[in-house]
Image 1 (cartoon, rainbow, N blue to C red):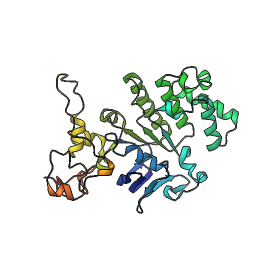
Image 2: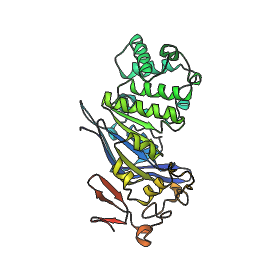
Image 3: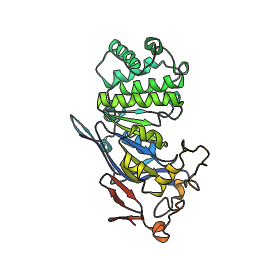
Image 4: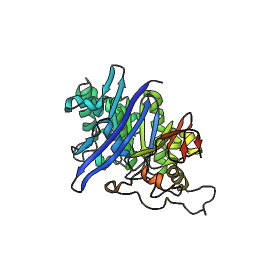
Length: 332
């Protein structure tokens, strides 16, 4: 496979009225072309901020770490995203080579502009198409994602479409520029299970057809098990476990990953009570020292966990974990 994206030592802080907060802390990962990476964790763990960093979409009060590197590898050459400054330069990663499916399409489409006009506008910006070509191609993409009567839907507003149709329209819009990387920020959260399954199948088909890489953000490990090739588990701005999706789900190593899996309902025994992770995710303004999960961890080792940040250790050839329970030789 061909390397598509390198994220190295991504650290991101925000200046707020309450003080400077760390939203993402020393995150590194890679993505290959045609690969789907699931980014999972609770709300507030930094998933969306991490994804938006790849497109430099975070607000003006964002401060990136000095060691942060984000490199996008295209056929025409590699792009150092952190070096892009002007809006014109950033067009290559904002709707060009990278597209983003937002979590709530109703809030993402402009309510007073038709779906079609919004699709045409981005094609005029990012491609050499004229208005007629952009309109024809937009209707074709709406048809490709399974929207019935696409010519009519093209002329409609977002509020006239159902939730499933809006999500499909958002996917069609994101894919119409034929991006090399697609970031899907919880694209199935607001959908019923039938439409959710259809969207997942659609994304799988598009990966095969276009050969794009996907960063799939969700809090649902069940969705990741169906969709991703590999998974990165995030907690309070730090990655705590990474690996091939089957390895991580079948053999979770970090107590947080184990907690997420234990919280899933069991279809084999519907009477089994749910097992939530105790406590709440801390505020970014009150980040715990050492391992950020130690305040909620049942396997807390005491002083070491509360003072030392764990590095990544191998669990297997395709599976690593950042936990003091592991060392270079494996599990203690």
